[in-house]
Image (cartoon, rainbow, N blue to C red):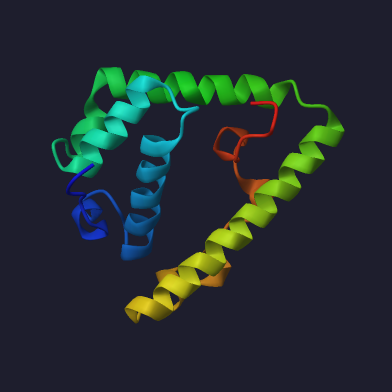
Length: 140
């Protein structure tokens, strides 16, 4: 990818700079992850390149359908977890959220914002996150 949009280019759909930063990072993950289906990868690359706006992507039936399909797959996979696998997944999610929080705080220090612009009281506990949004388990 030659030129990539900035976090600021996502402010039309983000509530604050920290959310725009997380969205940008999520788009990069979709674009680069070999486990992501072609349609979602294409959407992420189109948005990151600036050829497609995030609002347009979310309004596209094809991209929205691909997102819905992936969410349904994640939900089905979550329903098949044993209690032990669920506990392990929740622990991975907790560590992932802590890492994201640490990275946001570090980015905030680098760009002069206060800890990633999101107060600690607002940060989610991984147990409150719907299963479809949890990081995939090794079985996925």
